[in-house]
Length: 420
Image (cartoon, rainbow, N blue to C red; front, side, top):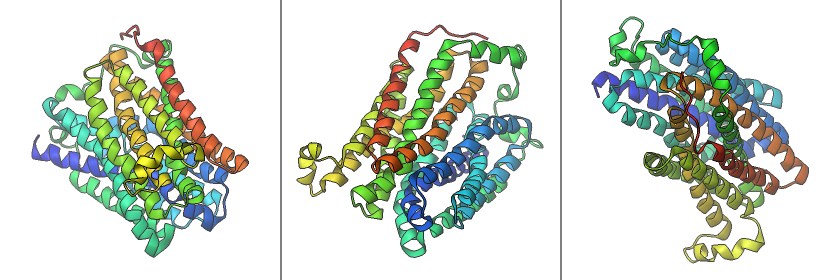
């Protein structure tokens, strides 16, 4: 890897780190926001859904824009937008203005995943591409892990508003990193792409015809629905685990925040273990394993307050860990293993079912499916929590969706490959 490529990978790592720090910081800070703003769980879910609505709507546009225009300017401007929305969240006083502020962050985040991964692929030679993409995607896990350690300290001094303010300031810094470190490839294309073949667009198939072929393929729909269910399930703990553990299990904020650190660290292990496994067995089997792990994690978290299973944690109590804390941490590990691998494995599966020159379009469509589940999850689960005055049903929904995501993959274990 050349020095120029390494610098670009560093900038990409920082971009994914801040994007997912802001994205999942909401759930960690939520208990304080609910108490301070006096909002219901449904309203809290609505604020989060607004983020994923703008993220889902703008992701295809930003992907197209990054192929047409200067990626340096795009990443700088939209990272600033991501940070500005987070900074404004520190001034939230109502559901309406918090939703509007988070919409701004969601639009900014739309440029911080697919365009970033595309940038890295163009900047790094083929022999180093896998390592570069792994380093870049690791930024999301590092961001979440660090957040779980740092936020309790920030909140203890500056309240939840200070947490948002610090994330916003950090985002402004990352935007500056992007501006300074990413070359202006419109003026110096060799600085950004050591692989000239990657810059050539495929002209053999018209866009309308290409999408027509893809949409007629049943595999797209089965995996898309599965991906949507995964999107729904993942956001159950990432939205409400913090509120659940502080309200129902009497966790301290430090204990709650560390749950997210545990999920992030086990997520790194999941990326490595299940990622390698997907190269040995069929990738669809690993996708199903991810769904099962997410389901077990959701189920265990939701059951951690039930007396009927308290005996399961006797072993953990012998280690000096209280039962609820031990149960939550244990199932956070399980959930994290599935969470860490699920996004890269689904993305890597596209070439297994579709030709390479249309796999990018397929991933874009699957991202849209995922967005639908992500938009619905916070609001719907928040509503069930308000109606039942408990979190069991919400986590049960996450469990059901996780298992269903694996079931929807059964028909594509032996799919017919779509050629362009």
